[in-house]
Structure formats: structure tokens, C-alpha cells
Length: 230
Image 1: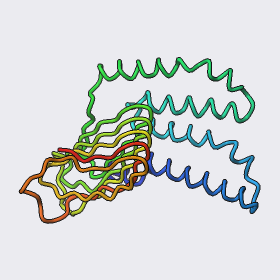
Image 2: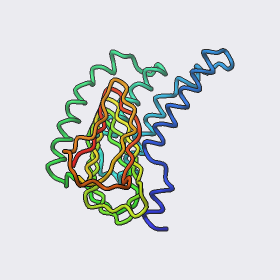
Image 3: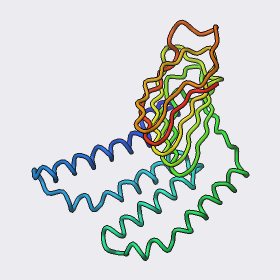
């Protein structure tokens, strides 16, 4: 099985995160409407976010460490509190660990390449409490899933080619930012829904713009932003 095919069949961090939000919403609806008592099941919701962090580690091949580890730590502490294995006061005393994690993210950024290059036709990037930068150089780019939660995600498509237009980028920014870098002549349509956030195409105006639609950027931004730049 090729790397491209495998990356398409595996669920992305964004898909997993979205599925968890839907599941939590269904459990809440069943409980509030009295159809089915689900409060005991809701106690284990933090473990689902631990799963998101673990999956992000695996999907990045353990190259993106700090953000997922912080997510795992926060969700794990939340789980201990909800199950009465620890109190809020006992957990809060460990807040300096977040400062340490931030420092580690800065240090690690000095010792590894800031931008990861890929030639896969589909790109997935999930950033939580950190940053992920990728450059796609595929000659058959089809799309991407980009998620930023209290962090930032950047995808550089200036060296990518789109044989089957338009390509589709789905972006989700929650208290974070998603940046998509494209050639200036690309025709890009923004279908992002901003909820107390922003979505914009920040490229300079140019007379040379492709007639056919090259890229559609969809998704939503809540307390964050999605932008297209060159």
C-alpha cells in the first residue's frame, strides 16, 4: 500500500476531534431530553480527548510532541478529577508544567526543521497548544484537513500542482490560526464560517488570476482565524 493511499484511509485528527464533539453532543441531548441517562458515560469524555492527543502523536510519527502531550496531560488531569481520583487543588499545583512545555516547544524548534515537506496528494495537520508547518510539493494535490486548537497550522502550497480542480482544504481554528499559502495567481474561494473569529484572503490584488477555480477553503473559525496568503 502506498503512503498516499494509507494517509487517505486513516482518520485524520480533525475527523477524530469532530466525531468526539458530535458524540458528546448526542450524549448531552439524550440526557437533557430524558430519553436516556448518559451522565455516567459523560464522565469519561476527557479520555476521548486523551485519545485525540495520542492519535496526533501517532499521525505525526512522534515529530509533533509538545502540543499532543499537553493535550493528553490536561485531558488526563480532567479525567482524574471527574472520577474523583484527584481534586482540582491537587491538579492545579502542576500548572507550571505548561510553562515547561512551552519552553520545550521553543527549544525543540531550534533543533529540527521548522517546515515539514511532503509530496502526498492529501495533507493532514493537527496542532494543539503548539504549531505545525508543512509544505506540500505534490504534482497531484487534492486537498487537506487543517486543525488548530490553541495553536497554529500553516500549509505552503506554492510548489504544489492541482490537476483536478478545485482542490479542497477544510480548516478549523479554535482559539488558534490556520494559514494557507498559495501562488498569487490561484483563484481561491473562501467558504469559512467565522464565529467570533475571522476568515480572509490576504493576498495582494493582481490582474493575473486564473479563470478556473483552483482551491476552495472551507470550515469554521471560533475565536481564531483562517487566512490565505502568498
